[in-house]
Structures are given as C-alpha cells and as structure tokens.
Image: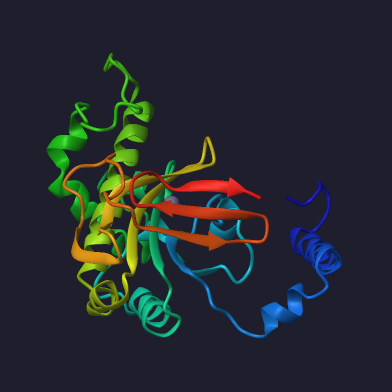
Length: 269
Ligand SMILES: [Zn+2]
C-alpha cells in the first residue's frame, strides 16, 4: 500500500522498478528465461479479491501459474471467458493441475445471501451463487453444518453478522463444489483426465491464516495417472483423493506439493 500522501499508481510503478531490479540482481537470467515462453503446471481459478493473489499466496513465481479470476470464483458452463482460459490451459499449455479456490470473507458470497440488489451487472453475475443459496437454503439457515466444525460454535446465539459470515463461508464452499462439478463435465478437462492424468482440485483459502486447504473435490488418483472416476465429493471438508499420485510444482523459492493422500503442502527449499 502506498505511503500516506503518495499516489498509489506512482508508488506501484516505483515498486515494480525496485522489484524488477531485485529479481534481476538475484537471478540475472530470470527475465530472459521468462520472456522465452511459458510452461505453467497449474491453472488457477480464483476470486478477484485483492487478498487472494494466487502466485503470491502459493509462494510461486511468474511463469508458474496460468490464471483466471472473477468475482466469487464462479465457474459457469456458459461463461466463454472461463471456458476459453480452461481450454487454452488444458489443451494447449497442458497444465497438470486445475485448481479452483474459494476463500473466506468473500464479498460475492456474502452479497448472495440475501435478495437485496447490489446493482448493475453484478446481480446477473451473482445469479448462480444466489441459485446455490436457494438450493441449500435449509442447510444455510441452520447451523448444523456437517464438516464445518471449525466455523461453528456450540452456542447459536451469534449476532446477524456472525451468522452471515458462517453462511457465506458455507456458500463459498458449496460454490467451489459446484464449480468443480462444472469443470469435471467440461469435455476438454474430461479428455485430459483420461488421456494424461490431469488433476482437478477444489480448494479454499483462509485469509486469516494464509493457508489453503484441499476440500477433497475433484479427481482421485490411483497409481499411475488419474481416473475419471473422479467426481465432485458428496460432502465437504474431506481429505484429498486416495492413492499415491503426486505432482510437484517447482517455484523459485518453494515447492507446492499435491499429494493424493493428503492436503496441499508447501515445502521451502
Ligand atoms: Zn471473493
């Protein structure tokens, strides 16, 4: 954030200059290699929220992650923008992992909890989330949320803001589950799963801790490559798929490790 009194854009440009100088000093070949082309291993589908910059929170580097972000990380089968990014990443760049990530404190999820209008095109954009809310109204209105123990206190005397926060968390998870189901039905994704073991992950970023957890939706791994028995999980909060499949994505300062038998892990090196 720009210091008080300094123009944010001018500050951002000076910050970029300092960053480019630092990266070039740290690794003189960094930018020439970057300019030679991209071969990312991960496609990231996330929210536009400023607190969820995928490459930063993954501890990776430019060139590591192909990205599409929109408000509330909504994946609709008729959204040509998302579909084009998925197709290019999967069919042309041949990424190994597709990661759909929701997050805590999502304004889109919070806004979708009521029928109050946000205004403009935003109500149209949030329509799938509102439909999801309607489909899960009974669960969202109760606080017996299976698999969400970490969010739910024993007492139910929360104030409206707390209740809505919990509902928004749950709706955001349901949105990831629904988005993974859409991805798993995408023909390009289906072919890549069958033919080369593409993995699809439904994940959730907790802004308060900086941690990403695997919700257990998506592909399952058995031995060599993924099977198309992969599916959106029936519950939430479950572990990752079983088996021994594992892929490692190397960044400059860290490794993001996807394990078939546990949550996403980060190893510094
Ligand atoms: Zn969001």
